Structures are given as C-alpha cells and as structure tokens.
Amino acid sequence: MRNFTFHPGPRLIAGDGQSAAIADLLPAGHCLFVSDQSLVGLGLTDPCRAALADSGHEVILFDRVEADPSFDTLMSAVAAGQEAGVASVVGFGGGSPMDVAKLAAYLLGSGDRVEDIWGVEKATGRKLPLILIPTTAGTGSEATPISVITCEGGVKMAVNARPLTADWTVLDPGLTLGLPRHVTAATGIDAMVHAVEAYTSARLKNPLSDALAREALKLLSANLLIACNEPANVEARSAMLLGAHLAGLAFSNAPVAGVHALAYPLGGIHHLPHGVSNALMLRHVMAHNLEAARELYAELAEIVEPDCAGHGTQARAAVLVDRLDRLVSDSGIAPRLRDHGIPAEDLPMLAREAMRQERLLVNNPCPIGEEDARRLYEAAW
Ligand SMILES: [Zn+2]
Image (cartoon, rainbow, N blue to C red; front, side, top):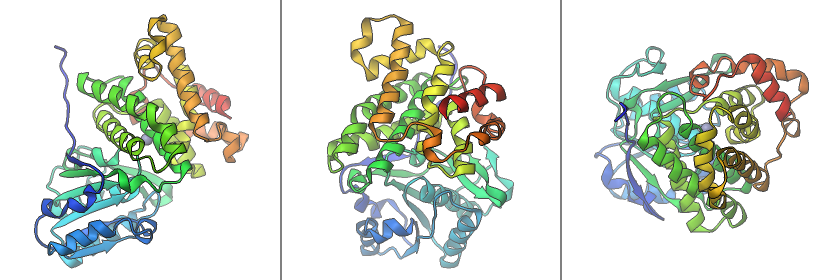
C-alpha cells in the first residue's frame, strides 16, 4: 500500500430538523452562538437557540458576521465570548459565520494570540467545544480545519490546523430550502469544484479522499439543477448538503488547486462570490489540465455521464469538462468574466495576483505560470 494520511472530520448528525437537537452535545454553561443578521432575521436560528435555552444554556448571540469576515469581526466575537465566560461555541450559517466560530472557539479555548497561529499547523492548543451548522451547500467549511479572515488591506489570512476541527456538524436540509437560486447555483458549483480538485490534487490525494470526492460529485451533479429549479425539494437539498460536506472532507485532506487559485483574485479584488469565481474559471483551468489529468477526468466523467463509459480516455475526459460547463450555464450563472463587470485591462494584474496562491498552485496536476494564468483569464473573459 502506498503511504498516506487521512484526517476524519467532525462527528456528524444529519436529518431534517436536527439543528434543534444540539443541546445535549454541548457542556453546561454559556454558549457563544455565531451567525449573521439575515439568518437571524429570517428566523432560521430560532429553533436551535430555543432548544439551547430550554436545556439551560445561556445563548450569547453574535450575529455581526459579514461576507469575507474581517479581523475586527473575529476579535469582537472573541471579546463577546470572553466577557460572558462561554463554555462552548456554535457556528450557524455559510462559510463566513462558521470560519469565525472555528477560530473564536480556538482562541477562547487555547488562549493563543491569533498573530502567532496564521498558517498551516501552527495552532496546537485546545479549542472550546464547537458545533457547526451549515445553511448553504457549498463551502464545506463545517468539515474543514480552515478559517479564512480578511485582514488589513484586504489580505486574506488563514489558520489551517487540526485543532480547529469541529466536534460535531449538523446537516439539516430544512435550513437550505429558502436559498435563492443564484446562491444554490454558486455554492453548489463551488462544492463540485472541491470534489474535482480534490480528486486530481497533485500531492495528498489518497483512497479515502478519492472515495469521498467521487460520491460528492455524484450527489452534487445529479441534484444541482433540481435544487435550483425546485427549491423546496428536500431530497435534492439533502443530497446537495451531504455532497458539499463529503467534498469538504475530501479537500481538507487533498487540497484544492488551480481553479481556486485563479478564482481567489476575482473575489479579493472584484468581490465576486466565491462560487461564481470558481464557476467562471472551471472550464478553462480544466482545459489547461486536460493532458495531465486525463485519466482522472475520465474516471470522474463516468460519474456525471454514465453513458460515456465505453468511450476512450480522451473522449471521456472531454465529456467531464463539457458536462460541468453545461451545469454552470444551466444553473443560470452568466459564463464570462465580462458579464460580471471585470474589465479586460485588469487581466494581467489578476494573473499576477493568482501567482500569490502558491499554496494552491502546488496542488494543480500541471504547472500554471503567470503567462498561463493570463491566457486562462483571457479565455474566460
Ligand atoms: Zn471553494
């Protein structure tokens, strides 16, 4: 057997309405509940917070997490937890509230200074007990030990360390029924990119991450358009939520690569949603990788298009690229960079910025240099 390491994610509870069943999983005492104002306004957090209150937990609500959460937001959440002497943390929402909850739980539990733990595996202390409850089917943040915070000057800093892994995750599809179509589409495509990039990841992919990525792609590709077209379809929503979680487990072991590296500057500079940025670059980066990843793309093609099983490797690999591209356009995401207000004169600068994502580029099946990046942005424009 080839040597490999696999890290499991949090323990998992799944099922409609299960977000109200978390009270018994947390220790007695105050609980810092991290979310955002729109979810609280929609009443989505009510059953969960009521269950915590009924079981004697005092809930300290921190609902000021914004998209791309800032350093100040993180420190405010930590201060709220410190002031109340919380014994546990719940993160409820999309990637942003969950990222803040993960790092706040760690800083509150360990007493470490965040300045000392940016980077990979620098955090080695103990966090407070932590439950994560995703309300989108996309980021997979509930499955990963990664927290991304936007610091001074818009620079994204990350803590990526095993102690940030949640103790429990709750997958409650009922929480995702109200997601608008464009959010369902963008987050769902992001999750599919996680599965594809984990499966073709150059360094750390292994038999377990492969199995998770394959199952994730199967669930996501079969259900994305159903979830877009029939938002209240609980079965499709359940499949998307589970698929996104499995993809999260896959890429927290076998990290994402070129699509994400080229997507990040679109988010950082032009504030495109993360899933949209990935959708726009997917086809072009896959075309660039086609030679190097042909066998692996061919294997995945049979998952999204079983009819292509009898075809040769090259044909099946091309089928995967086309099929995923069709899913992007059928989901309603406008397919070109210019549709999203990216000016052509920004492309060289975007290519330069993408080169800073070295931690992701090293996972790509073949090299992407600055010239390649510029060509790929031009193709996507
Ligand atoms: Zn992503």
